[in-house]
Image (tube, rainbow, N blue to C red; front, top):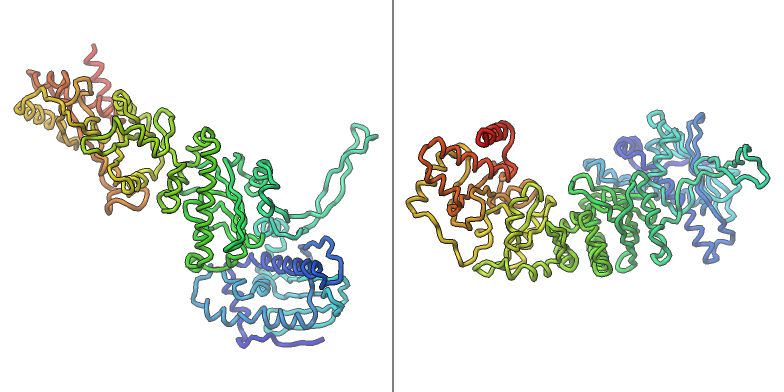
Length: 628
């Protein structure tokens, strides 16, 4: 038996790294199974090129718990190692990065994910084990070997009587890590990291029900048998060719990824590229709500079928982090920090490729079945609007498929919309005014007034719409968006032919003073306007610019500093051509005049959804008084 010292000059490197990596200690299992997978795939390669004179067969990786002996075994049937290889790969290479690692990370943050980055994958087993043993038999005719180390820089090496090729790693689990002797915990880790590894992974057995024999009686129990419990699917959908998959295969895989998700995805995008980088994957558009905060961290990132993370920011463009699915690329380093990823050239290329593929898929869906696309629009619009805002290239492509629905459920592309409204909705300065509502119920009277004039009113109700309108106005000269309640219609789309006022300047001043006196404490800016006598006498509006800035501030970015906390601002527009306004002006007693003004104002507030609580109660009793 040989003993030796691992080639590390810092005596206390083991406890130091063990303590340092503690926050991430569960990944030891991922690392050891990845090593076992590599060893098996290497054997497959060598036998395929004729270098290994043996039958590859159907190797598997087995994980076994020995609860009484406090041991965890990871066994593969791969390429194995000889004594020389153990000395080289375990004693020298596996620990060679240790000092560099310590220098670089002793002051760094714990979660930057560094195991693997320095070839320290095997070492991660010392985070959970007091002693680690390797029993290995090479695929060549070299004798089997048994290596062991107790977490000090010393190791033992002796011959072993192992007969089958491959490697068995035995971890003597430390007292502070006994969770890794629990079946549920190991199951959870295998499911998290190894669900789609390319080699079958066995973890215990399970009982399988067999079909009853033909001559069995009705009451006879169905026969059962114990079979290997294979915890992974070595051939997940994303590793297959799109031509070999049907919609049902994609939907089944979606359920495999998200067992708790009961709704089918709306559609999928199969990614497959081998130049200038390797990347495969499937992305799904789920039904999305307007809540941007709860959607993220649903895309899983893999490297050669090994799970890496579900925080894919920096690899997937931010607007697509609301999608679900899998991305697998050997070109993305397994364990590196966020900032490294964001600066990495290959990763940037991957991000723009994914953006392009999503845009192309949406364009094709729109062209091939517009009706179906329109039906799905409300469930996917938040991703598309977000993408148009955040990615210039996506914005350019979205011109072909982004839809603008009206309050009546008609859908236009931007070009179709401009064509449809230019005759009626161009103002005196040749500016095209796009009218929209954000809430059909509360803005109902304003919508009806606009429709009565033949105007189209869009329904734009997602939280990022104010930002998107700003972007569309910037990229389209002579175009502006106005919410239907931001001014009265004649002001929203100003034409040359202004209405003639029925009141003299003197009467206007008197009327304004009367109204301001009654509304002084309500904070309205009173505007007198000569409008059609059929239009409402009192209309409450919210100025577009101030309201939009406030909304943009509330959903992040844009707007002036602190505008999110500003009070609401409303204008009270008084139609001086309405008969009721003439009556207010002609009223002899101040009491009756105030009552008419208050009643008219409250009706306007009611139509804007602003009349609530005590004021609503008072309005109702005042209305009953008037109709007695």
